[in-house]
Length: 232
Length: 235
Image 1 (cartoon, each protein chain N blue to C red):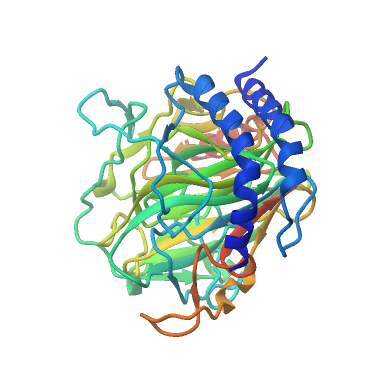
Image 2: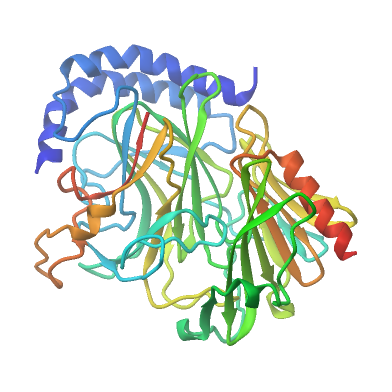
């Protein structure tokens, strides 16, 4: 195996580098709650890896208390273990289907028309037992793409769990009001990587989620505000 | 100075110290290596042999598909464990050069109805003090076992292995399409300028021996450097 030969040759060379690397990671990360812990690696990795390995884990904590409600959202404390939910009888794969006819999708109860000045460039809908579940739209604004996902949230699926991030996480999850509607915003805490994350606004039974690699959160919030205002 | 700047600056120092040693003694693999960084991401299942299952979608092939609601451009594969019932799932990457910074978030949000973990990756390119967001590597149809909002570095050489959860054994419900026990693993392509995130479209053509399963459409995650990675970061 070529990769294994590569490991044999490089393992000695990388030992020095790895030792320096590891010491800096450990010294830098000890006081930061968001940092995954460096743990000892097994002699053979999960997929049969051998040679130089660096292993991490960040075990979450089972939920006990501390959640707060924000409209349809249950805001869970940072570090909370994913809570398995019982949504009742789970649908079969055959219960889902896709619609690609744009004219038909524009008649869907989940369809949202883009604001003035924003072009719609693609549409796709998924249904659950024939009922609209989700509409995926691609909008274009100033030559840059915005992905828009409109999703139905049935009453039995509520509340919607939102897992807050640690105070020092680079990506933050925030609860906000946008045009009088409940919204969840995921965005970088700081730094220049501003086109990461989502603005999701709750429109009384459906969620509309905006993301873009070309536009920042100011623009995404403005789009959410325009849609929320129209739906008010 | 922001935390992000501090993180990447500290890492730049590490790489500056280690790169010369690494470069001088490393024999290049058969695959083409980029000048700055080359990181391969393999299948996340805890097994030495993975079966790729069909999932037709217009974006790719009979196997590669792009139908995630929250990351609609992600190229993904549905994977099952050929050799046993182990369901543990890890982020597993191999660094030939460079490094990256990772932060986790909940996949079941922002339009997605299916449980999972998204690993968001930055690389220190073109400016190590600012970095560039390069991809989301998503592990879906799993019960997450990592704290959301936690972060880790991809090692500057060798393997980086981080536990992310276990494959769901029953339908998640709540509007999530599910067609049996599997891991859906995907990455956000980025191909117009560096840093790149490549999809290994040919991985489904791998013909590694499969002593315990059907021939074809199987990968040995730690096998050769051509067929056994799913996504690669290069810058």
